[in-house]
Length: 487
Image (tube, rainbow, N blue to C red; front, side):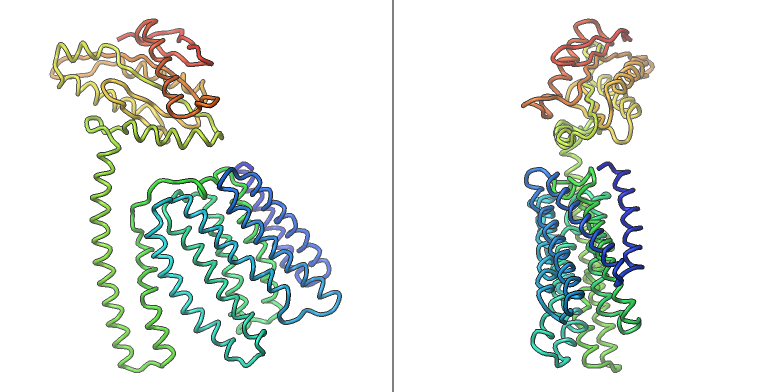
């Protein structure tokens, strides 16, 4: 499903869920509820089938969890019409069974999107989960256990807050793990937020709202399901299960949440024992100590991040021009090629006349030419494109979502821009370039090395035919440019 299609799907889902909320509890409402839920379950299985390789397992678990919740609702509706709905029963097995499956699916996604880089996310997630678990125990679980109900009527309702904490742990691991966070990630996290919000509403809203109104929250579960389905059908869903770029910055919100988690246990203890002036002083002192510790922790992390960022920049960029190096080019190209969603074009450049400038005017002049050409190439491309220097006087332009006709237009612009004179110590230095153009390769060798080799061969074909030309690699042959711009 395309991105616009996902947006229209969510518009339709919101409208359908609104109708289910309005009619909830009636005969018509039950039919509408089952029909919408059935469609969402079918789409969740479709999303699982569309997933490739290792990414299929977490989407399958999500589809199973959604199907278990649907089965529990169907059993409850049948009980409603056939006999009566018990306080606890077989439906709880279906509903409770979906939570750990969903949490496992989220954990699997986090491990796939950040392999070997999960330690910080796991520790932060555990910190926040323990704090949430403590609050859940004091305000949701313990009151149910102390209410004096029977064994089943006490334990089963208390398991739902526990299941929510498990689901929250999975959500936090995804939210805090490194990786790309665009629409699919936001949709999936939004789905978990809806589930947790509905469950929390079931526990708290009866104190302030009529029970009949609170029951209508049940229909909102389908909104969470729709968000999860939209994430699975989104064309960019691969970001949830594919290794992403490193995220090295410590977000201020993360520090704030960790600080709140640190204060949760002492605050809960004082709430239980009661406050007087001594407890208030202790709370203030504890808060101040936690703030100072977190400030020192943040400062140390920031210093480490700056050092790591400097080392990473040096490892990924050419020291003379500041352009990306071969390693970055290969990694970016390797991530773009497997998607297959859009065209990917590569322009391989070799300067014409550069050796003569080096021999006549020295390496300082050559360095000035390379820096000037780098600036011109960077100005010629879009923000989404990548300009890389492979070494010597060879450059590569990596242009995602660029069909061949647009790559040729870019090559013609680059030929013109590079051929302009370069001022150096009162001299007007001139170089040209030969350009080889290649797009996504096919077959067993369809990888970064294959596309770069095709572009390199096309560049040498253009250079053999005369300088200041472009040539396109096409099915093993090269199409020569009809015009040239010689230096």
